[in-house]
Each structure stands twice: as C-alpha cells, then as structure tokens.
Image 1 (spheres, one colour):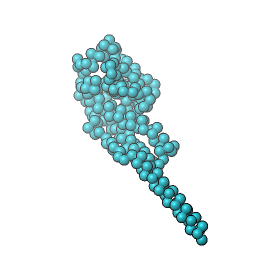
Image 2 (cartoon, one colour):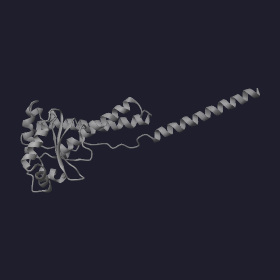
Image 3 (cartoon, helix red, strand yellow):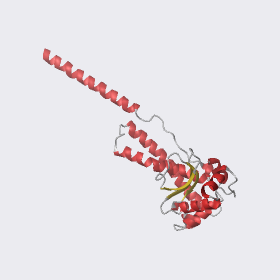
Image 4 (cartoon, one colour):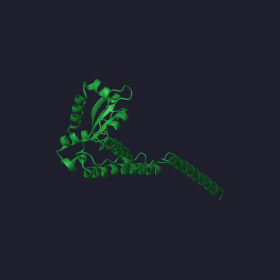
Length: 229
C-alpha cells in the first residue's frame, strides 16, 4: 500500500510538471504572436478622372484591381496573425503567406503612386531640380522621355519607374516585373507607370501598350512628380 501511494505521488508530480511546461509553452507561443495589425484602406482621393486618352471606364476598371490589392494585404496580415497565434509559424501555409506578401503589398503601393501621378490638368515639368538632373543625366528631356517610353515597352508585365537614389540623387529608368521583381532597395519611385495589360485594355486592347504610353505621358501630374524628388 505504501509503495502504491508513493507511485501515485510520483505520477501526480510528473503530470503537474508536464501541465506547467505545456502552459508555459502556450504562453510563449501567444507572446510570439502578432499583437496588432494595421488595416489598410483604399485612398479614394487619388482616383483620377477626365484624363486625356485614358477613359473613366478604364480607370474605374483599374481601380477595382487596386482595391483588391488593399484587401489582399489586409487578409494576408490577418492570416499571418492567426497562424502565428496557432503556433504554425513554421508551416508551409505560413511560408506561402510570407512569400506572397511582397507581391500584394507592392501591388497596392505602386498603384497608389501611379494614380497619384495622373491628372486631367495639363502640367509641364518646370525648371526644377528634377528637370536639371534629368538633363544632366540624359543630356535632354527628350532623351529621358524616349528612354522612359522604351522602358515601358519592355516585354513582360510590370511597371516602368523613374527612380532616384536617395543617397546620391542620381536618376534611372527601370522596369519592374510583376510588382516585386527587380525593385531596387532604398531607391525612391519618382514617376510610376503601370504597363500591365489591365492598365490599358479597356481603351487600347491587349496590343495597345505603345498608344497607352503616349496617353499616359499626356496626363502626368508633374507637380506631384517634382515633389517626390
């Protein structure tokens, strides 16, 4: 009987110890989870209208896609928080959400740059620091413009971006594949042109990129672009 009581006490002690360890691990798991996540909202004040050669119907169709990126970023954040809270930070589904984050987030941000640098007011690049640097780099505004257009005609889906190096002020035109491939770390977008087919198919059909680029140039909001440099 005495041996039975001792055995019972040992088993009970081990059970309580294991319970305490499991509770501690659960608390650690909860402590490692995301506490708060920011909820992004569409920036309706950026939506252009009355553009020259880019119809309101085209913009409305394109805007829906932008909103989907905003929603997808919020959904990804919710999924990541939930998976972390469940202790699934090393799971394949968690890794997949991490992998997709750059695509969805950049898709949201680049569209905001794009819509913001469009206007129905006819504006011109003034004798600003930006124009001075463009001429210094390409010898003339016309040379830069030709290079920017050609960058936008690069075969593939993505973006043509006039970037500035914040460390040196140097400018470069680059093509970004999809939303995240080819992004230059720390470089600042100055002028952003969407050249995915969805940006022009309503007005110009699938083979109308060149005509769309010409219309995009007509609607650049140069004061916004200059302010970014």
